[in-house]
Image (tube, rainbow, N blue to C red; front, top):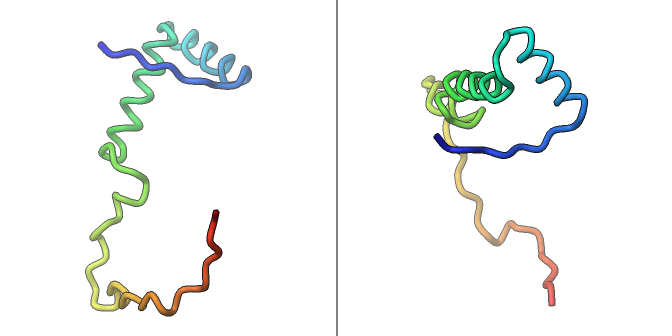
Length: 78
């Protein structure tokens, strides 16, 4: 099984420890189960990816690509 290191603030750590204790499981098991639930909830996709392709009416169309000439002038970095 793979290992993961995460960084959390003290208040979050105390809350996680308390939640794991309430469920009588190790912190590792508690965190693993929550991560698995979160990954299943959106199918492992990013938040907006779950909506891709869900609008099928004719009013939803990709906009036309704008020409590069309509871009604002950019400053060069030396």
